[in-house]
Length: 101
Length: 112
Image (cartoon, rainbow over all chains, first blue to last red; front, side):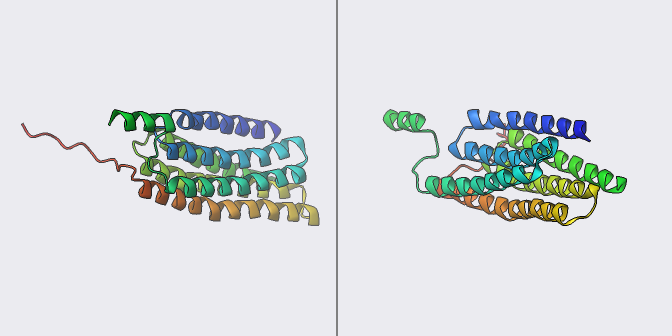
């Protein structure tokens, strides 16, 4: 069962790397926020599995819970912040478009 | 207790399947709203299935007060993600709609 958990953790880490592509090259800011939220959800599961691998599940469970709470709050705060912005493009690109007009 | 282990493996592999589909949707879909659609559902279900499998696997040594409490705590995290993830999806989609993110439409064929 140890090796099964190791393989699952490696697959999840690979998926996190794939999600990071959207976080870096995402066309808008909101795409990056989605990517951060998805990575946070996967990291919650990864932390619980790491707790099983190390045999200290009661400690890693608290870490995982805090990660889930912070992920939710961060996504909500970012959504609230970008709701009242004029453009969802990144700052430099927005400035460039403004000066071209 | 081999039944609990097999059940846990089935649940975890189901969760990994939904995580993979959510990631493929995040990478491949053409639009912000389509990506939101893929990740909002696939990620929530994947996390819930994986955490349910881990909670079942935690009970395979036997039912005592400590293991049952830890399993309940894992299921609490799962239920929190099940409530919080769609809420965050809704909030960020509303933000995108208010910002005026363009909706992807199929390109119309130009008549010759």
